[in-house]
Length: 401
View 1 (cartoon, rainbow, N blue to C red):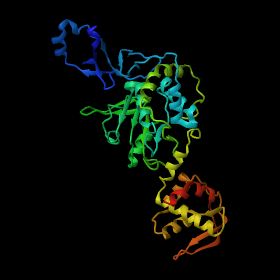
View 2 (view 1 turned 30 degrees about the horizontal axis):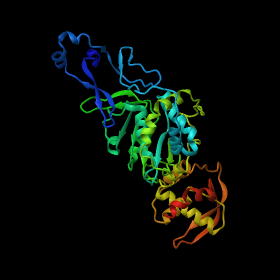
View 3 (view 1 turned 90 degrees about the vertical axis):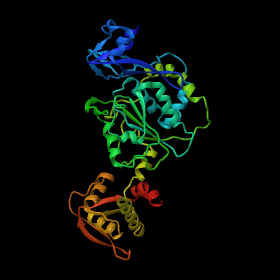
View 4 (view 1 turned 45 degrees about the vertical axis):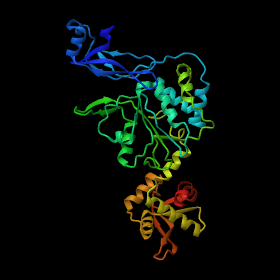
């Protein structure tokens, strides 16, 4: 019916328009429509039959979608595909390729997106220096799976103050990401765990809305596409290998299995239980790719301190070394790298997660002299203790670069 093409929300009229896509499908969108135009096209009496709503809301659901909640029009997009029993052989292989030895966790992640769209989830990062890995295909497949509830952003658009085009989306995907500003990292970290966000459109006042978006980042830069520290637990970083065999019809095959995959997700039992604010415990989503990213985000002061400590341990054949923050500060400054006690203490406590001795005790202090000579002497203080294995594991490779 023609009157179902139009709605009135508050005092504004909208038309439901099906915009064609390159793939031959259609995306239904709401377009502001002038009431005089509606009268010209359909007559004055037609306007009274147009459904009326008090305002917009956005309540996500893929299994029990409702268009109207208490007189408010739901802007979340219903899915066009419907669950249907069938085979998902191609989908299983592809998900296995993306998540590797974390395959079951990957299925849990996708199942939570489908069944519990408001659940906070980790920031999924897919990285690889190689080409033809399937990162972009993964995003296109998710777009086909969640349709209008997924949007693509660029680095610039994410940094923009205007966010009305993505604040109500389930998935916000950023391809070729490179966040070289710390403020962008802090922004995505905040949004990944908050339930509310300020929606801002050009020419309109900010309004507070509920936020349930999840971020997926893709990058060819494995080492430093984003700035994070060693204590960060919100990122799930996976290094994606090259596809063993390039299949030009892979995306079409995956899309053909979407109804069966939806059926599978509806009937599958989660292997994990909610054990953190982002569902998964940090230990379960830790990967070598995350460790590599953290290594390359170490500050110059941190790398210099680790280098000095390793040098002292190698000279005196030590497996661990004791020192106070003042010892470390003098040593790093002696190497002409400026630092202070505040930064040294932050590195030891926050980045290295060390705890000083509760009382002042005797320890062997190291001293770096002007010409690079190293000596040791007995003194007392509330010292920190660092093991050689820790430094080799976290710094050895980055100091060789």
